[in-house]
Image (cartoon, rainbow, N blue to C red; front, side, top):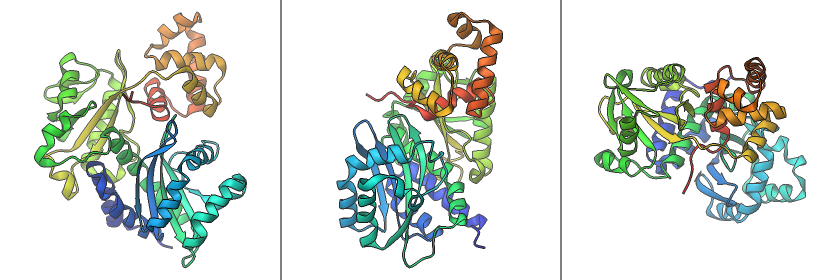
Length: 380
């Protein structure tokens, strides 16, 4: 049985992270991903449901006329993706083999699928959600052709390994608004971003902070500097931050979902996304001795309608939804209980049930989950 060699996996993960620094590298990286799963073409897409458009799309192995046909269906496809990639059908990072679902998408979806696949000799498509927010969805799509065998569990296993790394790279490309970072203009480029960016070395030592991050450090929220190292006040969040930075330095291939949408509790809650920098020719050029870049964005308090969709996804009761609304707004459990007029015992019972349904074990993890599911950054 085919397995992905450790050095091949490491090289591929490094290429994926290089794409966060230089999005123009996506086509070549897609080529390597497609070859690894024996596919002859592929795409990585970020769809904006609110505007029914693609914020960005990178392709490999796709003919211009095929791409024109695909983007000609853009309005319909955003609705199609919103439906087929609901949590009911597809968990984040879990590859979906489209041929297994195409019979249930209706005549319009089947017509589009036939138009986009049959003329190109595409026998099947493997698509994987790598970013999910209330109005945005990012997907990596790889296409298997008639001349090769059917998609197998081995192919799906490889994509599961790559999915969290692609998710991290796509999220950072989104935060940076699809702009390239170059070593020679690093400081000036980073100062242009509204997100806080802190480049750290071993044990979180701060090597560089952009203007937004310096403002955060000055007011000591949501990040602080302790003996020259990046830190946060919440002990649990600080441990998670330090752990993600340490793994980024030791072996970026094992970082998985650590440091993606990491909740940073404060009066104005924020989230952090951590990009490994210790390896790869491109990333190591940015700054000597750098271990990781930490991107910090404000966590927007979700609208009640957004939290309703979150609640439906996880089967929360009305009482649990009200509890989540207060926790998402930054209240502590005792404060939420007092506002809701319930006892602390009842509040703790609600929280235990919420934890059980959402698969988390701490309040910070719950907020991080909400921030991953709902938009974490307020756009102008």
